[in-house]
Image 1 (cartoon, rainbow, N blue to C red):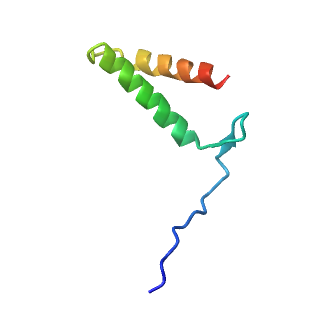
Image 2: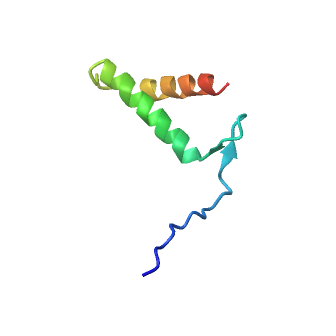
Length: 67
């Protein structure tokens, strides 16, 4: 039985690259923002009603790291 190779072809029209040439998938950026926002919420004990604030702070933090 011949081993199969995973299909590595993907739709690349939504991909971008950063200054280092690393290809970024926009969904990965969303995942990173989500993770940062989660840890911000966790740090303050998941106090309700601050989801948007956590998300916006995480977006800003990620954007400043990308500059």
